[in-house]
Length: 112
Length: 114
Image (cartoon, rainbow over the protein chains, first blue to last red):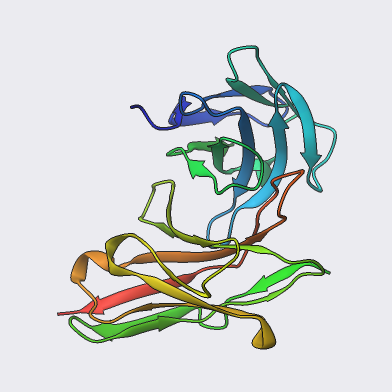
C-alpha cells in the first residue's frame, strides 16, 4: 500500500504569491493533518480535517487555509507568501484523529 | 500550557552503546504519547506510541519507551545503537480524541560514532 503522498516535493515561490500543496492520505484514512516544520524545530500544527470537516486549527494567520475532498485528499493553501513561510510542510494521515499519524515526505517550500 | 520538552538538543553515542533520549511533557489530560524519527530531508516515521495499559511500549527498529506518569516523562531507549540510527528524534503528545493535534518537542539529533 502507498503511504502518504505529497506534491510537489519542492517549490520556490516569490513573496506575495499564492501556493497550493497537495496530500493524498493512506487508503482508508479519513483524518488528514498539516504541519509546518521550520529548519531546526519540531513540526507545528496547522490544521486537522476529519471526514471533510475542520476539527482543529493551530496558531497560524488567515493566509493559511485548507480543505479536504470527498476522497479524503487534502490541499493546503497559503496566500500572500512571506519569507518566513519557507519551511517543510508535512501532511499526516490516520484512521481517526489522535490514533497516531503517518507522515508524508513533505513539501519543501522556499519563498524568495 | 501544553508542551513537550526534549532537554538534549544533540547526543553522540558510540555504535553498539545504549541510548536514552529524554522527553518531558506538560498536558492537562491523559495524553497520547509518540516518538517519531526523521532522517535529513525526509518526513517523520512513527517509532512507537503509548495510549494506555502497559507503561513499557515496544516499537520498531528495536526501540522502546517507558511512560512514567509521576515524572511526566516518556523516554526512548535502545540497548544497542546502530550507525543507521543517526537521525533526529521527536517526542510528541496529543489528545486522546477530537482534534488529533500533536504537539512536538524541538527534537534531539543523534550522532553515532563508529
